[in-house]
Length: 120
Image (tube, rainbow, N blue to C red):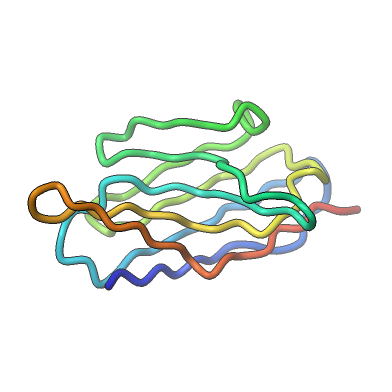
């Protein structure tokens, strides 16, 4: 069973920056994909950014050029650097990982979420 520990959320003014971290532990196999999703009040959860073990990244259009996802494979940790934050970035941010085991069987895990609030 994989456990995810997220950190780095908080309150920031518009135009400010935050850095989220997600550390995965307890995996006996390969953490292939790591990513961040977010859910604002009254809205559906949406993809923010993902990164593969080979460092291939994917971003939502709304965060391109402002957010940067990265990872440390040795530590099974993913990071999300968020710059030029806007009020519409306010949401609970969830870490998501996909573990791939024998015969290609995959399992998906979610973190508990960390609140990001962008407000003056």
